[in-house]
Every structure is written in C-alpha cells, then in structure tokens.
Length: 321
Ligand code: UDP
Image (cartoon, rainbow, N blue to C red; front, side):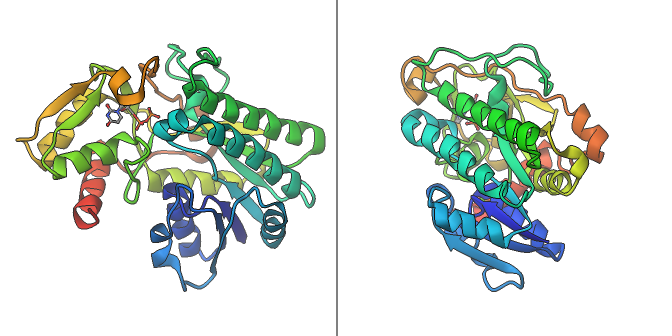
C-alpha cells in the first residue's frame, strides 16, 4: 500500500515511515518542518518506496494531490509539545483544527481511510484514572492557554467522527499517551529526552513541581506498530483507541532512574511550575490509560519497559548530542 504521513518528518512520523518501508509499503511524507526535521528522514532518503514533500498541510492543492497519490493517510501533522502550546497558542489552534479539516475534506473525496492522532490531553485534568475512551473530558478555563491544545484536538475528534457518521468517511482515532524513543527532542518540553540530555551534560535534572505527578511512557516502536495495525483494520473505523503503556512512574522517580543510569553524581532540582511554564500553569497529576480496548482489538502488548526505553534514549543522545 502507499501511505501518506502528514507530519512524517517528526519523531513519531519518522519511526512510522521506517516501519512501513520495512514491511514493503510505500511512504509519502508531507511536512513543513515546523517541529519536524530533515535529519529525522535523512536515513530514509533514497530508500525504495520513500518520497517526501516539504510543504504545509494548509497548502490545499498540495495536500489534495498527495492524498490522491495515497491509499490511506496517517494524519500526524499537529502543533505538539506543552511548551509550544503554551508559547504559541494561535499556531496550535489554527494548525490542529484547519489541518484536520482539510485532510478529512480531501480524503473524503475518494474515501481514503484516515488515522487521526489525537492525544491523552483530551482527558484534561480528570482524576478518574485509568482513562477509558468513553471517560469525560475535564478542562480548565479558556484563559489558560494549555487547554487550547486539548480543545483543538477534541474538535478534530468530533469532526472525524462526524465525517464517519454522516459521510461514511473511514476514520480511526488514536489518543497517544506519552511516547518516547530515539530522535525525540526535549526542545518542546518532552521530559525523557530533557532529563537524559541534562544528566549527560552534568545536570541538574529539572523536575517541575514536587515531582509527584506521574506519567506512563511507551516506546515509539510499540506505538507505531499499533497505528499501522489500526489503520489497516476496517473494523476499527469510527472508533477511538488509547495507545500507550499503563506502567505508571512519578516524575521524581523517573529523574532518579535517569540519574542512576547516566551519572549518580548529578543533582535533581525542583523547579516551580510558574518558573517553568509561566504563571497559572496547570499540570496533570496522573495520566494513565486504560488500554483494554486496544488489547482486545490488536493484542497490544508493548515490548519495551521503562528501563529499555531509557537505555535506547541514552544510547541515542550519547551518540547524537
Ligand atoms: N517535566 C519536568 N521537567 C522537564 C520537563 C517536563 O518535570 O524538564 C514534567 C512535566 O511538568 C510533566 C511531565 O514531566 O509533569 C511530563 O511532561 P511532558 O512535557 O514530557 O509531557 P506531558 O505529559 O506533560 O504532555
């Protein structure tokens, strides 16, 4: 099959490209390099079945043409990362809503299946962990720009599900939980590459808040394998799936683990949220997925545990500082 990957030069898109090519599929990447990077695609250039265009998904003629060339679409292009969302909310809202609208509109012309990558941020600050796909969304006020990301993705989900219900446009929605692996950068706030980078350069490791907040980290190769299986399965169309690991770790315990693995001498520094993200920032206290729906559908069982994930990131950042 030939797949279009919007946002294919990003961290997750580049791993997805690698998987699809290894399976003998063809890949066309469309990316404007706003947060993605050509460095992520360098090793794929020249591979049989691989092609890319550097352009925005908001360039409608180009988007229409690339969708036309593909059999199905992985729609990954989005404003990502908490730091970017807080610093550039206009870009976040416009990219996420307009981009998805255009992808669905053009895919619908010939009913090309679309996988929409949504986010665990959708559950907001709900305390009802683990989050199931039918759990409530709990957001803060519109004066806190963090929630614009979750709301923009919620609109994307509503739109995709409406295209399915009203027009029978095949869509599957995945809500990605914290996804980690080689080639992820800490610039946009992602905690594991940041901690590993900080530890490798002598510290300190900066833990925001008191570090009792927790997350579940899943290796990107486990995540992209799930995306691939879901888009190929017509029985998944019209459905929403959590994709991630359910192994929970506090951010302080994560910092301690990184320190133990990289350099036991580095300091761990607690940084107040206000200092890290600006005044009024609200963090999620716990974010744990219920992945039973995904397990039932595709037998999902991540191959990498936290130590294996950390080992891969440490290895990558040691060789690509
Ligand atoms: N975090 C941290 N130090 C950092 C970056 C992030 O303590 O240098 C915390 C952040 O406040 C959050 C968790 O790590 O509680 C995960 O952050 P990330 O941005 O990776 O993902 P999120 O789950 O917040 O989307």
